[in-house]
Amino acid sequence: MSSNNRAQAPVPTAIFSHVSARYGRGPTVLHDINFRLEAGSYHVLTGPSGAGKSTLLKMLYLAHKPCSGGASLFGQDLMRLRRNGRADLRRRIGVVFQDYRLLDHLTAFENVSLPLRLQGLVKSSYAEDVVELLTWVGLGDRANAYPPTLSGGERQRVAIARAIVAKPQLIVADEPTGSVDPEMGQRLMRLFTELNKLGATLVIATHDPTMALQVGAQAWHIQDGQLHHNTPTPDGGPVIDPYHHGGAS
Ligand code: ADP
Image 1 (cartoon, protein in one colour):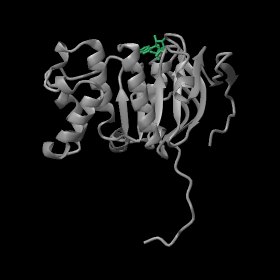
Image 2 (cartoon, protein in one colour; image 1 turned 120 degrees about the horizontal axis):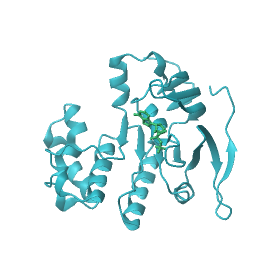
Image 3 (cartoon, helix red, strand yellow; image 1 turned 120 degrees about the vertical axis):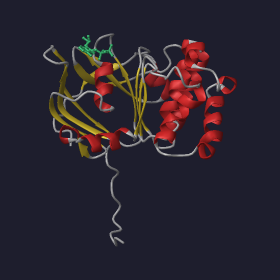
Image 4 (tube, helix red, strand yellow; image 1 turned 60 degrees about the vertical axis):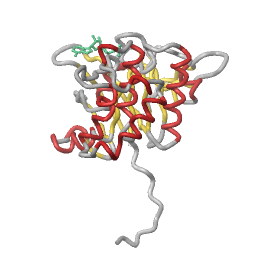
C-alpha cells in the first residue's frame, strides 16, 4: 500500500498539442489544434457544416489518428497507442454517433445493453438499469422494438442510452439532439448535464450556437480549420478568442 498522501491533480481527460488532421492524402482539415480537456469538464463544439467538428470528435474517440502533433487521452500517448491499449481506452468513452449506428437485428433494450454484455455482465445484473434508462429517455414502452420500426428521434434516444449505460468517463456526442423535438432536446441536454455533474467529461457537437450558454458549458468553435475558445454571453452572442497557448501540457 502506498503511504503517499499528497493530493494528486486528476489526470486531464485529453491534451492535444499542435494537432492537425487530414484524410489520406487530402487537404489538412484541422490545423494546430491545442486544448486541455480537464476531467469533469463540459464543452460544446460548434462550427459550420464541413468545418471539422466530427473529425475532432473522431480523434477523441480514437476513430481517427492525428496526422501530426501530440495527443494524450486519460494520460496515455495516442500517437504510440497499440491495439490493446486502444480497446481499453475506447471502453472508457461513450459515443453518440450522428447516424446512430444501432444494430437493426437487436431490440432497443438489446442495443442499449450491448456495452454491458461486452463487459461480460449478465442480463440479470443490468436489466433493471437498462429499462430505467430507456424509460428516462421516454422509450419505456419501446424496449422490445427494433430500430427500423423506430422514428429518427427514438433511434437517437436509444443511441444516447447506449452511449451512457456503461457510465463512461468521457462522453462524445455528435449532434445528439438533431432529430428530436425541442422539448425532448431540452430533456436530453438535462440528462447530459446530470452526467457531467456525476463526473463525466462531455464534448458535444451541435449546430445550435446557444447551447453552450444554455447548459453552462465551455464553448469551442471551429472555423477555417482552427479551434477557437469562445466566451458565450447572454446578450452579445459568442465572443471568439483564438486559443493559441501553444504548450498545452
Ligand atoms: P463537420 O462535422 O464540421 O460537418 P467533418 O469533420 O465531417 O465536418 O468534415 C471536415 C472535412 O473533412 C470536410 O471537408 C469533409 O469533406 C472531410 N471529411 C470528413 N470525413 C472524411 C472522410 N472519411 N474521408 C475524406 N474526407 C473526409
